[in-house]
Length: 177
Figure 1 (cartoon, rainbow, N blue to C red):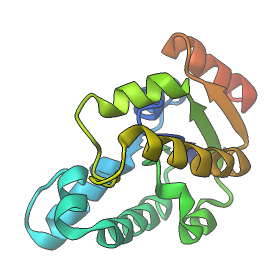
Figure 2: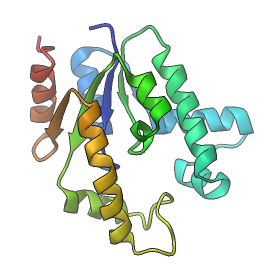
Figure 3: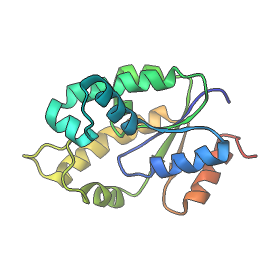
Figure 4: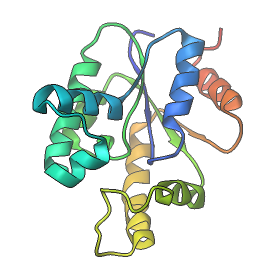
């Protein structure tokens, strides 16, 4: 497989931890898009800020532009890698075009667990401060899950061990060794 293995799904569904495990098994580099956004922002603006800080300070349009730029750079690389995307990355049509030809896996987790994990650090930057957090989460869930399912070759449910989830992905993609 010469294409990149790309993990998509809701924030805190387990994409990064699964990505690290797949990276080890496949002997491919692992890249977390959020880390690349932070790196690119620091390079362009001379200041290191978290994704949450970038969103709060510069707004969603600026953040999504950085996100697309980082995604473009990563996918242009010739070395096949395992890439974990942010939850909103696959929603942009431009990003969907970039992702064509790569192996996309939707990492799903139970809705209640995802909401709980998201709220651990307080209301996320991509939630409106005026609206109820759970209502916003429900709306985003309803919007995003069909997009993830449409784009992904397979969907795996993060409900057990990372080792078993890794095996499931490798088996579905015929990458077991």
